Image (cartoon, rainbow, N blue to C red):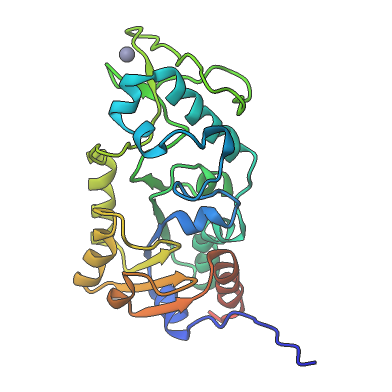
Length: 267
Ligand SMILES: [Zn+2]
């Protein structure tokens, strides 16, 4: 029997580009979280909620119709995320800056721009994380926009209805901190992400299909600005044609291999 050891081959151009970069943007999507066991929005076979149209619930209209149901649903999602762990890909991204600094002694800034609403990059140790589509962990007041607090304790995933907390400033309802269907992306994080792309030397695109707009504009901007762009995806995405390197690998396999190869390089 032929035994094949499928060790991911790290593209040498990518190693060279990272070694020369002082600012790196890592742009991540649902594929990154999927390897931690978080189902993407559309795929979740959650029998408890099967009869509800999640696309409708995750909308301003769904919230207006039934705040308690929508809040319970998001608390269930937050509870599910808290039961998962960052995967080896999240950990590798968090180690990238220190790995490169150990190699050449120069400071390297790694900024994560994510479309994911979980907190797995932060839990893995990444310190600069920009959330384009909001976060399950950043609820805010629907009236005054002040950050809100969760009711203490573990979110109960079995509840189908739950009172949202109230704002401590104005007593309005606290809403989930994610961007809903039909809502614009928050302008602050978006502008910050555009600035990060402007000043980066390398952009890594990880685990994203490149079909969600306007988020997909960022890698295209990086390409148009002449940045070194590389995609790490299990299959080429819609963005592949804008990439200098298309590396067919999953995040949890490829990124740790990348760190391992960087550690072997001589200064
Ligand atoms: Zn308020």
